[in-house]
Length: 186
Picture (cartoon, rainbow, N blue to C red):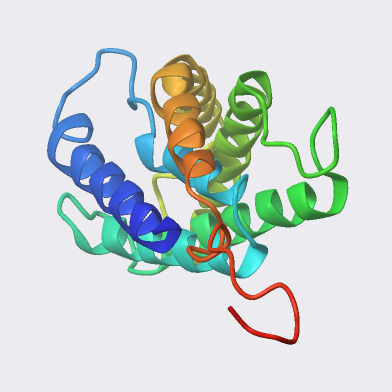
């Protein structure tokens, strides 16, 4: 069930980002990145391999959906690495409180802010390496700053509810089924 929830979360985030948020022209530049906010919720509640796969799939979908004005795979690379690192740090450090406890809302918001900053800078760095003429220090600073602030502001509406949904499902669908307790069988 958790795998289906991951698929739905990532697909809905990509579709809303591509069809609604990216189509709105904001006076201040970029809008919030709902895909990053959703991927943080997935990465904080799963393994690094699943998080990287979800990040790659979401990034590739965002690369291919219009208005794609960059090289295919650029966003996929950045989201794959970001989701992997978030899940890896979560697996190695855990969260405040008991070991194995679900991440708190404040953890989700803070990780969303840091991840959004990292994704923006990583996207700009990949663009700089690939020779994108639109990457300049001033444009990058404004776009990353505004994007990080807006993504952090919407994270209580995106990341926190998705964390609750992801934590509602167990990792193993059969974890609550009681089987035979001894050698005698049922």
